[in-house]
Amino acid sequence: MYANRPRIKVPLEPIDKILETTTTALLVALWIYVIISYTSLPEIIPTHLNHLGEVDGTGNKTMIWFLLGITTIITIGMHVLTKFPHIHNYMVNITEENAPHNYQMSNRLLRFVNILTLLLLAYVCYSIIQKAYGNHFFMESALMYIIIVYAVAMPIVLITFMLKNQKAPKSKR
Image (tube, rainbow, N blue to C red; front, top):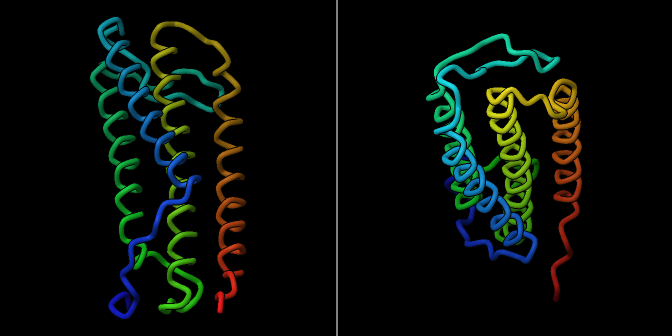
């Protein structure tokens, strides 16, 4: 299935570079935040919050590294997937002519999904740390709304990119 697809390097456009740089900066900032916060965390921290932002599960503070590790693996994994656009799923048959456009759109979509997923997981990590400190800030109701917005925004982003992907630019002859 993928063997017949062209394997080409997709050049990064400015928006792609911005997304990649922002994602990297956010991940590094999250690591710095967790490293700085870790020593002052109580031994027992929240590990799960219900829809109201109330703690309904606790664990050792080392669990924050598990969440950070999962976040890092997902972020790096999605970045690595952009290096292999020929294995992505497409709604059209990939040919030499349409591969550059389709690969670019698929990679860009993956970059948007990556940054949105990182933002969501970073917010969860931040919320858990703040809750461990006893701060309630805006988390009680905001977390549920953020997850709902994420759940609504992701399909919209996916559909928009799929529709745009169907409208490949005409070849310049």
